[in-house]
Image (cartoon, rainbow, N blue to C red; front, side, top):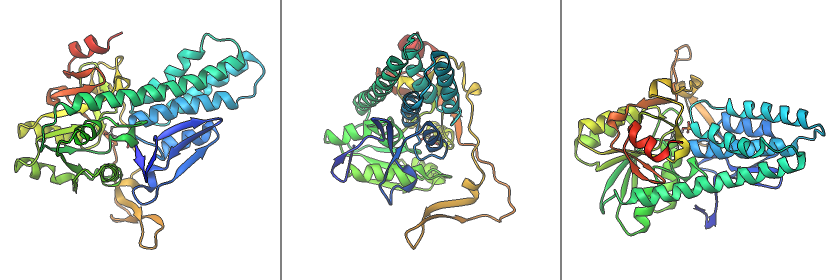
Length: 357
Ligand code: MRU
């Protein structure tokens, strides 16, 4: 996607460095960070320098390739043991997004049977780059399939950020919006601010502004108001993990939007590439839900008046807060899942027909 007239991906690798857009500074400051070690990639994922399922998946793949490239063991079995340690470190950085394990497994599958250290290094690098390219292409296809659902003049509500910043490029929930808008359809987006970390206000609005797509940021609890008034034609959100029965985990608050959409007769779509589908997960109740620090709830982070970044406390300092980062929308509320293969039903039959092994 274009930023200041230049084409960017969210994360990429060149030589022995991983580069990523520092998302915690957006929309105020656009900065690319260069990471030279596996540990710094792990840190970037867990502290959300990079976030969003697909972007985490590609970061994991690049992080693993970086660990492999930087490893100077001469002994093959020691080298292979180290790779397993790198895998474990990366996979534990964030628990909910299926894409992280998917990206790591993709790289592992390419190197496991090779017994030559130099070749393994080369294979890991090539696999990580291929993983990122495929992820980007799948999101482009999601845009093509999803745009067919969007009629001229539609008002779409989205939650969190499932745009290009949440993937390598294009995004999932926003990709159909971009495709529809570029094809000349008039679209308008209601952007849930998405407390506690405000990915909607910070990132989705940044992306939509970059594409000149009209939008309004709304408080999370205003979605029902606009739906009830008939102002919302459809809801599209992303997903971090989809179970085989169609239940989908996404940013906390998504479940509420799905129930509200159902109550108001509004179609509710999940847009996600196959890398988000966990064929080993039978239903939403088995999806691991990340619990993040309570300070994300009791404080609000942003740019301060003097231009620096910081947090302000919005609760009594002694109050307890709970901060589950995701919730699960039961399949029955999901009108369809927009994937790279087309729009499928949120049920076991449709998921296995399209994506079963
Ligand atoms: O905690 P985050 O920002 O990594 O959460 C992921 C998300 O951005 C959302 O849940 C998104 O809607 C799906 S990820 C494509």
